[in-house]
Figure (cartoon, rainbow, N blue to C red):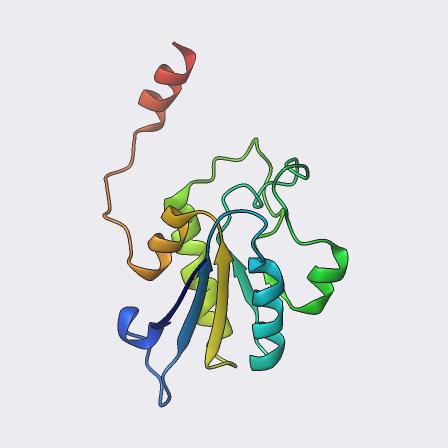
Length: 146
């Protein structure tokens, strides 16, 4: 399990009188990331951002080890079963959503927790992504139809 603390105020240039910290917990399925994240969220009285690319999707209930109802009640979670597999959702969209979510959390908390097994999604938030130009809808439609 990789356990890291990032001072997010330096990374994202958030204006604050106190430093803001993102505790990131990353590792494979079934090693206790969820339980640890809930304990930390309760200790710091903060919220949890899921960075697990499979737990985002409502239809993927089996095989993702998503938090159960009891665990979800233990701390506020973001990005658990919030999208359909029919939605176009990728790491770039997650980076924007998670960054926006962090900004909201940091308005009332100095610490946020991020947990998940998807290193790419974790890195998107903690390190940022290179930006690429968008694809014209007509080109995307043509590629999908072929």
